[in-house]
Image (cartoon, rainbow, N blue to C red; front, top):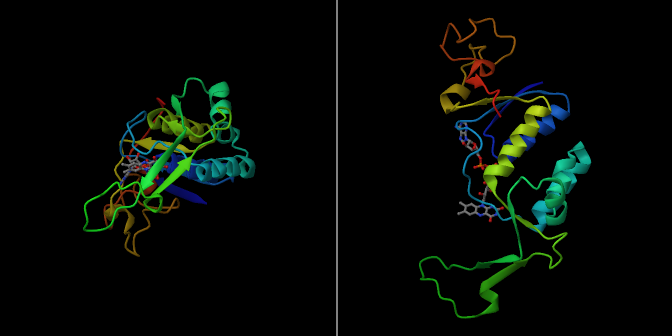
Amino acid sequence: MRVAVVGSGFAGSLVARVLAVQGHDVVLLERGTHPRFAIGESSTPLANLTLERLARRYSLDDCYDLAAHGRWVARFPELRRGLKRGFTFYRHHAGRPFVRDGSRTERLLVAASPSDHIADNHWLRADVDHHFVRAAVAAGVEYRDRTVVTADMLSTPASCSATSTACACSPMSCRDCRRAPIPTIGRRCTTL
Ligand SMILES: Cc1cc2nc3c(=O)[nH]c(=O)nc-3n(C[C@H](O)[C@H](O)[C@H](O)COP(=O)(O)OP(=O)(O)OC[C@H]3O[C@@H](n4cnc5c(N)ncnc54)[C@H](O)[C@@H]3O)c2cc1C
């Protein structure tokens, strides 16, 4: 099956790679370039269990090592990260100013292991997302960056065959609606 994945954050790169490992023909489309700044860096125990599960199910051994601080440092010292001790969520009641009254029912502490070897990590997303997109390319994914996918490209009229790999239109666009077939959108990135 020919699949287009839009966005190469870690979610897009991982799903593209898993599909490629399963034998699909995958193109990964990204509006920016890597490495790039991204927010949302603090992993959780559940996120790490998910990484370990992906590693086991699809033989993605790097995901196993990135799921715990000690394994990460030993295998990928060049990927920057921080040792996590925990973080706290505070309840915010809509329409009321936040008050920190010390009440335990108003906060949730998500603690990481006190053992450095198995503790969670703070990911430097620039490094980690870059790693995952390179791993996707190594697994056979075709990666195209500087490519903004718009709703217009995806809402193909029934008469248009531009998104089909069997498209009989000109290489760059459909003769009826002028849309480009997904496989020809953007430029293939070879400088990761
Ligand atoms: C303030 C804040 C703090 C957070 N803290 C945490 C945290 O501590 N821990 C945690 O687990 N999560 C946290 N999150 C959530 C976390 O940021 C997201 O869950 C995570 O980044 C989602 O990753 P992703 O790969 O799905 O998408 P993203 O990392 O957002 O990647 C999406 C990619 O798609 C590309 N893209 C988007 N639109 C298009 C388009 N039309 N065409 C082509 N490419 C496109 C973008 O350029 C980008 O590279 C936080 C979020 C915020 C806002």
